[in-house]
Structure formats: structure tokens, C-alpha cells
Length: 341
Ligand SMILES: O=P(O)(O)OC[C@H]1O[C@](O)(COP(=O)(O)O)[C@@H](O)[C@@H]1O
Ligand SMILES: [Mg+2]
Ligand SMILES: [Mg+2]
Image (cartoon, rainbow, N blue to C red; front, side, top):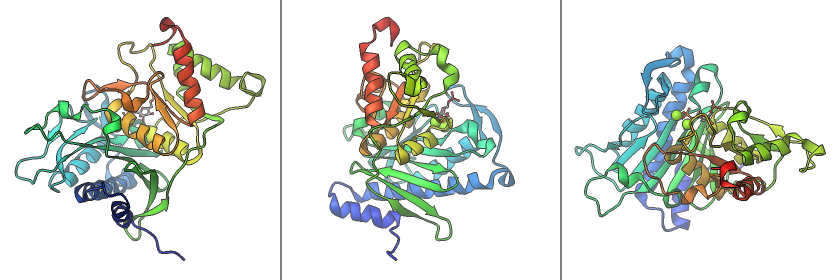
């Protein structure tokens, strides 16, 4: 039997193979993985650990915070602030950025995260996760501000997520493909379980919240209508549907067996481009998807090319199997402006 490869060993081998991975970045990723292990333990305790239910507060987006949203946020901050790898952090659960206190050594990276994705699934024991992205700090700025985080996703230096499901799985890219690690609870370490992950170009499975159908733009309705017509319709094949309502779990399925995921703009909040957040959710997931051979757009443009204007900016998301994402994007570009934003 071949010896299991730990996350640490994988990262060191990546460093040897690709000279551009600095020690600070490797150590930072190990700390993030350790924090995810801590969050995984908290999630596993569930009602026994008193971690379920609402925290009785709201985040900056006006969403009710669950206890685990706050626990996961605290675990990530506490694990990362003293290590010397980071200059600042930004989180879906915090209105402002968190700069590393001056009593700790200052690093050159910025860490961005959705500490607990899929909050509505916490109390019902359905898969949830942590999404993270690493950016480089601007060396010309003595003090880090929120503006330093407003970098397009194409400038990420690492991105990943950890899904807390039947298994705890960490999925990571440093720009050289996608690798998956499964948490071995007996050893307490993440073990490499798949390398060079590839998403099939075609699929018969779509993921979208169908209850919003009446609020969508025409191009999205057109795409879904055609899927629903199945073998009798223009696509000439039957489609299956899945919607877990945890982006991390839906994306994990797509990375594992293909599919398309959409959370498009809709009329419920016409002034917002979508529900999902560009920095914490869309950018890291889009980079992972592209690194696995898939595609990710906002319906018109590659998500990784979108220049963020604010920390908590939202974006429409279409990602997954390349040929399906290209079709949805074409439907948007072919539509007249009034039919599509
Ligand atoms: O409940 P809806 O509208 O289907 O939204 C589900 C989406 O919202 C999210 O839960 C948003 O993430 P948070 O739980 O981090 O706010 C996504 O994970 C998921 O894809
Ligand atoms: Mg989320
Ligand atoms: Mg969240």
C-alpha cells in the first residue's frame, strides 16, 4: 500500500515543483486547514456541544447569524492572527476588515473567508462548509485598508473550501490544478485523496433554486425551460436537478461529477447583482472551478475578471461544466438589454 500524503507534504512538494510558493503561504494554508479541522469538530458536536441555533444577532448583510457562523469566524481569526503570515482578514460575518494587531508579527497576505457557508443547513444536519481566498497585500501601502482587498479574483494566490459532510474534505488550488484532502479523524490530519481534479465538459444536472423562477431574467428562464423539456426539447436529453442550498456542497458535487450551478440576479432585490458574495464565495469557487477545467461567469463576463468595488459586493454566479456555462453566457449575450442585466 502506498503511504498516505499529508497536506503538509503535498504543500512542500508543490513548493519544490513550483518555485513560486513561498514558505509564508504554505504555513498560512496549514493554519487555515487547522482552523477548518477545529470548525469540523464544532460542527460534529451539534446539539451535544450547544452550537446549534441562532446567535440572536445580524451580520452586515442583515442576515440572522447562527451560533456556528460566529464560532467559525472566531476560530479562523484566532488561528490566523498570531502566525506572522497575514496583514489582515475580511469575512462575510464582519462589517470591516480585521487588521492583525501590532503586537503580532505582520505578514504579507490577506485572508478572505465565508466562515460558514450554507447557514440555513446547520440546524438540519446537512453539509455546510468554509470558503477561503488568499490575496497578496499591496507593498506600497503602510497600513492595510478595505481597498487593498478589492482585487479581481484573477489575483488570488490560493483558494479553497472545506466541506463538513459525511466526510470533511478540503479542496485547494494554488494555481496548478485542484487537489482534495480528506480529514483522517484518527490521525487528525488531512490526507491527499485526489489530484488533478477535472470537471466533465458536459452535464445533465443543474442546480438552481427553482422557487425563484418567476423573478429571473429571460436568458435564465430560457436555459432552464430547455433543460426541463428534456429529451423532447431542443437539448435532446433529460436533465436531473439538485439544490442543497449550501454553495460549498453544490460546488463540491460539481467538482466531483460535473454539473452547472446558478444563483442569478433576480427581481427580488433589483439593485443587487445577485445573492452570493464576490470576494468570499464567487471568486474562490470560480478559480477552483476553472482550475478543474470548468468555467465561471456572471452571465456575461468571467467572474475572475470582475473588479470589486466594495468588500461585501454581490454577484450573479453561473459555474461548472464548461459547455453548459458557455451556453448560459451566450443566452445572456444574445438577449436584448431589457431581457437581461
Ligand atoms: O436559500 P437560497 O436562496 O436557495 O440560497 C442558498 C445559497 O445561500 C447560501 O447559503 C449563502 O451562504 P451563507 O450561508 O454563507 O450566507 C449559499 O451557500 C447557497 O447557495
Ligand atoms: Mg456563503
Ligand atoms: Mg456564511
